[in-house]
Amino acid sequence: MGLGFQVSSTPWKRRMWAKPSLPALERELRRTYLDALPEGVLRERLSVWEREGGVTASWHPAEEGLSIDLHADGRMTAWAKTNTVGPGYHAFLVELLDKIAAQWGVRWNWDEAAAADEGDECGYALTRDAKHLQAQMAGWLHTVAGVLFEHRDAENLFLCMPIGPLPRLPGFVGSPMGIWSESRLRQIAENRDAADAVAPDFFPWWTPGFGADFWSGLARVGVWCDVAWVGPRDQNERDTLRRVLDYDRRAAALDPAHALDASLRDELHWLLDRGAEIELPHREGPGYKRLPTRHSLYGGPWSVEVPGHFIEHVLNGGNNLQYVGDRRAVYVSSLSITSADASRPPAAELLETAGRGEPADLSWTQDAIIASARWEDDPADSARHLYAAFAVDGHLLLLTISNEIGAPRDWAEAVARSVRRPE
Image (cartoon, rainbow, N blue to C red; front, side):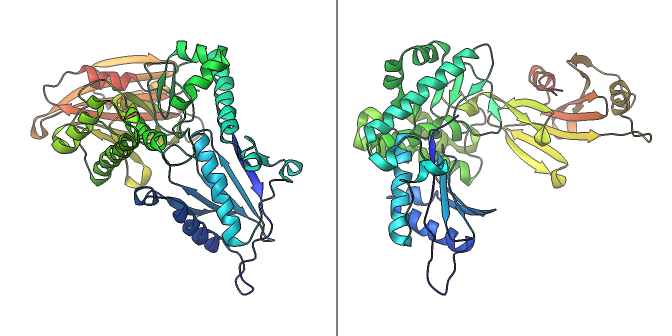
């Protein structure tokens, strides 16, 4: 359930001796897109890639991207979901298609789009009415809030967020711009005026153009979704901190009311200045990577919850996973086992085999999972390990959860007990 557009073009003829192709589409889209972005800090974020049947371009951290399909007769179909970013982004993409039409010698069939089950769901391509576009986005928020409120007994609801590891929320709904309480969603769901009032805070890019609202949205999405809230561990994390601070600086220069809270800005500078010595998020505050986060292991169905600032590493050709942060780590292996007669060995048998006759310090059940774990200290590495095994019929998951010798055991045990496998 979202808003966006889909529209087809007249044939892209290029030149008599150069037929349209996906490499040419990728190259020309990159060129036109770069011309449309006004600042180098934005242009350096642009990624354009070829996929089956077309090309996709993305640069805003909250977007799903603009996709253009190329058909055999040279026609193109452009489509995008825009409600994840907002009215400003929607207007920008429609105007980008204008540039493509002018520079590439094509026409987008907005007038005939409805007959082909296409068109602009917000009407902006035909009206160019920014107020109406904003009203459409606010109306969508009002409707979706009502749907979410009907599911208020559910946990960890997210709106306009990418698929992937998701944090355990201390509130009702998470979005790229922050966490929304149940009471606030109720107001939006029950009162359209409330939705209109709050929409500029919900959408990262509310006002068309590259004003304070645009730069502030980039900074806030970065704070919530991108910053790890520990000292930067590599160049990418350093660049993320610098980029968020630059976005905030630009927003404040245009309108001080759009600046980040001063304490939050100070914390970003502090992390950048102190570097890797800051191993743990030091306080509560905005930012999903401050929160425990559930990772689907090997694409599911096993999952485990680890601190949000941990980094995932894929090892041994994808056979193992490792989650590393500060001085702690979680190492993961998974096995699917079939007996000679093609049956699945029972969970208890698998767990006994995994234990290798060693006595367990802990044992428990969780839904269909049976689990056991034992502690072992390694003085040579100054490490304490919790070796945990989890079994259902035919499937075994093994975790090695490591911390410093002398560290409390509760964190490692909590990680082990967070393992789930929905059937």
